[in-house]
Figure 1 (cartoon, rainbow, N blue to C red):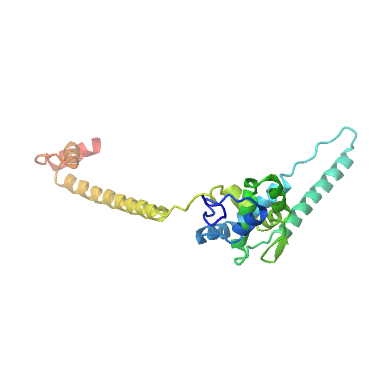
Figure 2: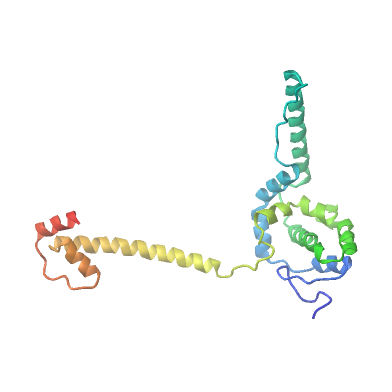
Length: 232
């Protein structure tokens, strides 16, 4: 059994025993490009979710019996402005765009923070207090994770960091598109074929039999066939 973190991946990480080992392993573990691209593509949404999760949903305060209408209106206005200020402060702390040169280490730091629970309690505390630098930002792993909106991404796509990519997804999508194209061609061809049989004088029952692979027999006649086809 590996005891020094020489095995493992972000999908199946090593269980280490000290904060130093844990942070060292997570600082160098390979992160697949498809994970990084998903994070980059989803960053604007992740940023919104991260801000909202910290600030919470704005709730209008309840009026107390001792407040006048004017005092209540003033309190509501102040609370609303304070809420807006907190949202704006967070938006200034979390970059509007994700640094492509920092995203790899941002993911690593977020995962190191996420999996700190695998360590003994005293080592968890060390991880929580450690200062790390990612890109142009320095802070604890939790602060780094928040700064790069990682909590928002992991909350919206909970399996993004833990589930192996589906290498067959693109192939299945191509097959589905191909089947749709074939179905469309088949439907058009069938319509042309049926129309041709009607013109030849085959009835609706005869056409159904022909489409089932049975012998329809001789045409029953143009008008009779058309009348039969319309009724069916």
